[in-house]
Image: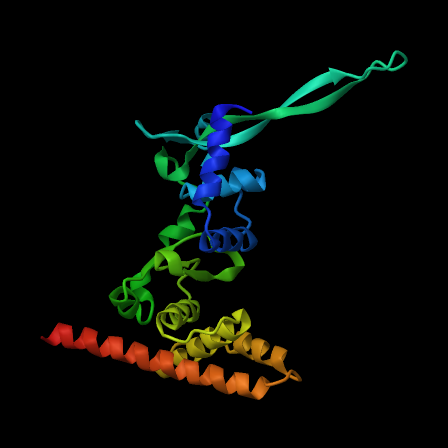
Length: 266
């Protein structure tokens, strides 16, 4: 294995955290099927690209074929490429060759963010995103939460606690309020460690906020989670706890809105 290849592995080991691992898995699982070459790379190389801050990385010539060029002065990131050699089988009766892995070498690729030229296939979707059209966007901004467009697939959107950011795949108001509720839930003390419970809280909170502000919405997701509790011990207590959490989220949001209003009128 080359020295550069060893450095790549070391950087992955040093750079990965539990939160980054979760974010990476979510990005892969909720892929929206956009034709991005690096989605076909090995799991390790996709992780290298992710830790380098991109969801789309390609070789120099691949970018040229896509109608884009690497910006002057841009630095490459490196992925691992297997070194395969052919060896003759030691058998007098058979004249065959087999492929043998001899190690790995590093290959330079460039992030989409370090290129310029023709629009990406998915650029129109990202350009159509208008954060100012989202309800309570001022609350998100006052809490220091960035809101931007991204390739989120079936997830619609997601909140990343480590980066205080919400990534949206569309302008869907209910989806945004769901993710904003996650953000507020994360800021409040006493957050539950159960994933399903937190999803119910976010869905109920989004549905409540939509009904409060006259935003068109669906209650199917929250209903599905609640139905999954049916027949389980303490299901009723869990539902009550979720509703209490939704009320706490609402009161927190109203507190932030009151401060924003006071600052505007001051």
